[in-house]
Length: 338
Ligand code: NAD
Ligand code: UD1
Image (cartoon, rainbow, N blue to C red):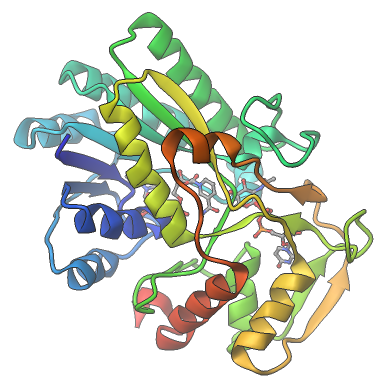
């Protein structure tokens, strides 16, 4: 298993995964429509690793383009990141989310099947656990979703399960990410949200930089250690290495599996802000406001299964996540756009 097709490889998690894969000697082909990314990330991947990859600007819903790529390259496995991921946007644009995340995946699977490539790693999300799963959340917790975005992940998980039931030649690993944050240690590769960030870490770094005035903490009366929401923040480089570990699972031809990718540790919103204050050495203004609709109090992963079966565990702590996110933000205050 030498040549990997990475869909969405120019994006946040995909680009960091490309770095780790190139460092491990894999040949990479990236397909991305650049809707939510900048091709400069691909150049940075090559600069960091000193290795090259092949890039096709194409949409995964376009089967003609995908077929041309599979014809030109002998793909052994696909890591499928491409998709839309803004949870609240998905409630106002459900058809776009189903089209991109569900139809796009079906098109990709049809082309993979046609070319006899049956090895896949899929980016799922902890959002498939909904709001009732007891913590730490294990992979066999019941799934229930609250948003169209979460439902696209749940539907694709079900499609992959049906596909495997129909043909057990497929090797599929579904990875449920918790809260990916941080950036590459070089400070040259990181999360580059368009407009005002929706997620906590980029919001905090933009406040720290003075681009935004203060952090609005969504809810201070949850049943948690300090009343604010608790999440399992995971360094994006650790997450990327989880994909390298998952490729070994594909090589073992072990069928269909699902794993959590998290640290197993929960941190509150205030703890994250305090950690960032330590890193930058100045206070970060914040205000506690109403809860954000749809948010849950606590979510962190049970990582027993992934540690045992993939031999993978997250290495970096919250301090390192803040240090690396801050380095990226200060070195590239306008992201890749400058
Ligand atoms: P991202 O937006 O940075 O990257 C996604 C990439 O896919 C972008 O480069 C975008 O241009 C590309 N893309 C989107 N639709 C496409 C299409 N139809 N054809 C080709 N390319 C397309 O997002 P990310 O944070 O790197 O997330 C990657 C994957 O992980 C997504 O599937 C997301 O749902 C999932 N995920 C992300 C998080 C998170 O917090 N970042 C958490 C859980 C799961
Ligand atoms: C959400 C999604 C998850 C998705 C992730 C990245 C759910 C249940 N979770 O995670 O699937 O992968 O986004 O797109 O749908 N917060 C603030 N102020 C802010 C921003 C966030 O207080 O300005 C708080 C939130 O209330 C939460 C924590 O910070 O407690 C983390 O929020 P966020 O970074 O948006 O991620 P999630 O909502 O956990």
